[in-house]
Length: 489
Image (cartoon, rainbow, N blue to C red; front, top):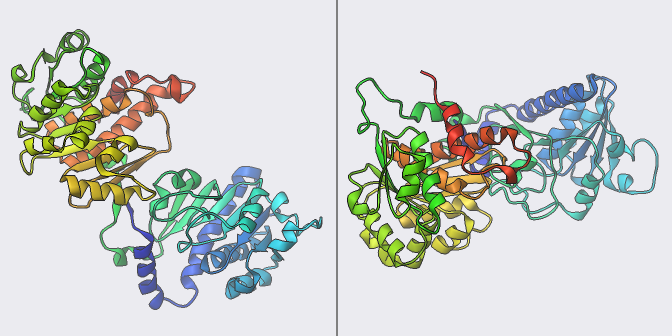
């Protein structure tokens, strides 16, 4: 499980470690790691390290110092290194001295921006690799015009020190010009920008370097599930299990206008290995034709007992749909409310009264549905989802390129892969069915939502393996791909 901390907490931990560490030792350790990854990228790109050319974009402060020390280490390996100083009077003194001792060259941003044509002023244009040390974790907002102009001149791959300059380290927002890195080397702990869109897409491959911060960090601000975490939480049938003990999930979705939503939601539940799926609604015949093993009825009163309900996809917002949501919430079992159910809860506050206090509820809005339910998201998606989860006393899963999930206790999971495959009509219906199956099987709501997001995204990637574009993927292909993700016993 990947753990993530906000930058304020990381900087506080760094202060503790720095106080008991020899001056400059942490910077040299971090910079050496940058140089190692830079050398690997050079070798992969050109088949060699010695004789290659590296340019350093050096801002003020410690981030620029990391870049300068990395340049000094690369010089020792025979790399030609030129540092471009954006703030010559604020450049890290020790780092600059180390680079000069190693034989590195130094120019100012003004030199590079001029019409000169000598080798030093062309350092960015001729570099095989560029190291981004423009700004550090304290920076906010996009790059300043002079820095942005330098970045525009870069044609080689960029390796970022801690973060691609110009992105917000805590929210992942990109509000102006910013570096797009091929790789990022970060120190001590993962920061929010490494897993939150859109910044995460600018990080490239992220390499974490241990500098001894973990004992000082405490509990993470949020976590990212990995395949092992998901596999460990998936309910596998035991020898004594039957269709009832493995979880019975009910689906109240779709209808005569959107019968496909009923089929897709049910498909997600069936193929996530629910012990039994019961469908209740006017699309019963369509669901039964697709899944003969589903107990499909026309009304909730005839559906029978379930361990969790899924409602909302394709339900509409008319009075009949409103009463369906009310009845599901009153059933005193965990509920997943998606799509139209979220819109109905936003538009009709009295529906909340039907829910038994403390009954698990998972809300799965996209951004527009979230805005109706909880107001404008803003740049800080994590903070917005945490606030909504506490206000609604529920688990809230905000869909997006970074799926953010929070529960009412403030725990947060984030799922990010950068893939666009799940962004297709009906895909969210499948996700709801997956969550429903996991909830019915007894998985804790926060992790039911988190594991479902991972399964859904991974299944979409498998389903899309032969599709030429994200738009050519159809949601119906996602449930079938879930089978390929089943843990082997």
